[in-house]
Image 1: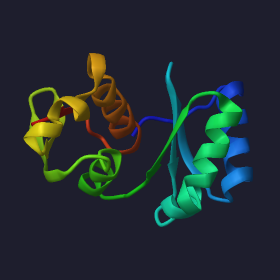
Image 2: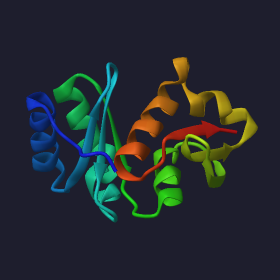
Image 3: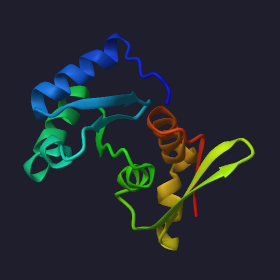
Image 4: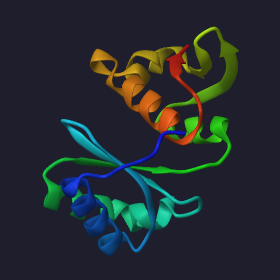
Length: 141
């Protein structure tokens, strides 16, 4: 697993998030159009808030989309959590020449959305998986 380091701005995001949601942040990824918070297992609902009120408040304050992902020590479950907005049919992790690779199978109609414009969702999934589990690449099938 990669060592997770926060810069000053990310630390401010984490501090605000924890104050608003009363949940513990394990990781924070700041991308050009959204901020992704990884929270401890079992804290996803609490972090999002009733009817999504915490996420809405943070979105208004930070002027960016806010996504909450619940951590799991089980790589397959963590990937399911990353892609929870889509119908995940299967997750396979296998060893390849260049390291560990994960394939997430989603409904055919959702494949494009799961990958994201310019593969941004895939890049985020790869980044999170390499930071929390020794998985170097992720693909959507």
